[in-house]
Amino acid sequence: MNRLFLGLTLLLAGEAVAAPQVRVKKDPATKTVSFFIDGKEQPGVLTLYFDLREVSNCATSPGIYKYEVLQNGATFLKLRPEDESRGVGYGYTVRYFYGRVDPSVDTTLICRVPCTTMRPVRVIRTRNILDFGLPEGQQRPLGYSFLLEKGDTVYAMRRGVVVLIQRPEAPAGEDPSLSFSTRRTNLVVEHPDGSESRYGCLSDRDLFAEVGDEVLPGTPLGLVGSYDGEQYKVSVIVYRRGFAPQADVMRDALQTCYFDPHFATDAGAVVPESGVSLRGVMNDGLLMREMSKREQKRWRAMHR
Image 1 (cartoon, rainbow, N blue to C red):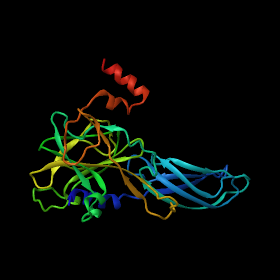
Image 2 (tube, rainbow, N blue to C red):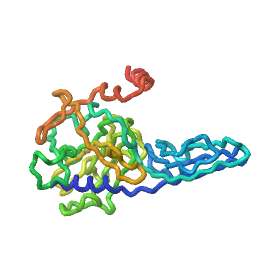
Image 3 (cartoon, rainbow, N blue to C red):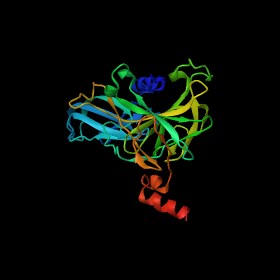
Image 4 (cartoon, one colour):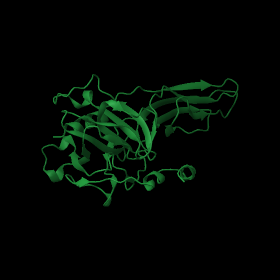
């Protein structure tokens, strides 16, 4: 049983983040009603489903609208009166999710390995804890653990924004019985395509990135951690979130879909098998493929 991914499964199921609020502003002169977001504390995308109903004196139709909000205080909807002598009538309910929902994800994108490229490292396949006890062929893959050495650096695999860091509640010792969720640092990066990567088991005292930082492939995130003071490893999962077909977006739970990244290695782009040793590579192509044309031009000018 892999204790790390038991913790990751539980954290994905119920992360505690402050809920934002909708603020309504009415313009007395034009009778326009504007809807804002207040209290967006986490960077990255905030997805909201807005169930607009009981609409009167307005051309906007009732229904459920989906918005992706980047900035706190952003206006996401305006209702304008058809008859400017009267106000707009409306009712609504809203549901929020941090991160993109049902994004179109490129699962073939090649990633940098999250560790050193100076030597080969062993990679272990991790499985969903809910499948423990099932035959191996029925166990669902969840991610990878890279077995490292004390003092090794953990690097970003892809471009994105650090949206969440979960630090230990108390200083971590070297007792092997310490639980995952309260004793090791975990970091989540939200990627431009809406997928997310979670890096588990970073050193509690040696974190280089902060929430809100933009990272690129190869950006140092921190030093690797350990559960028992003997084996050092970083574990990563890559996933997207979305609704099942025909789901009620205002009531049903999101589903998490995990997928396997392709890693750039000296043997080419590979999806590793469990137990293999691989040596990652870092090159300009891994950076350039995730840059805009303007960024690529600026980068080339700086590295002539």
